[in-house]
Image (cartoon, rainbow, N blue to C red; front, side, top):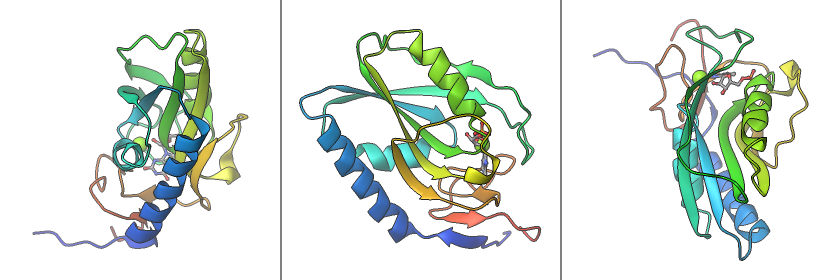
Length: 176
Ligand code: XMP
Ligand code: MG
């Protein structure tokens, strides 16, 4: 069996503590309101799964799949809708749950796509934010961690489809 241990950047406990705080903030911000949580596949699946357990509000969970990267570590500059949500979000409070905001193109595209469906509010929760390469104006309402410009993997994030299962966020090294 192949063994590998990518270098850790953010550990399991740190992630869990941060998510608890984000869940509390969302719970407080949406008192007496229903929510539609949209998990952006595939990268946000683990973050979203842990986050919704910390949101103490009635919610519906939806999934959307967008792709901008292919198998490379550089953005291809266009975003494709691979799978849409099934719920009607008109008049609803929407929280988009994303793994990482890098150039901001994915989120900008998604916000535009959803806003024409007339939701009541749209907020963004992102586990990670890499401010260095930001090209589009993006407002992250619930942010996990700001990180430097390194390609990260684990806790849902992949490189060429691998490493999503790691319970922590690691840095992709040539040796991996
Ligand atoms: P943009 O540039 O559209 O990028 O904000 C967002 C999407 O790019 C992917 N991405 C990464 N995926 N490690 C990853 O595994 C990274 O360091 C990384 N940086 C960007 C990610 O899919 C995200 O949705
Ligand atoms: Mg990805």
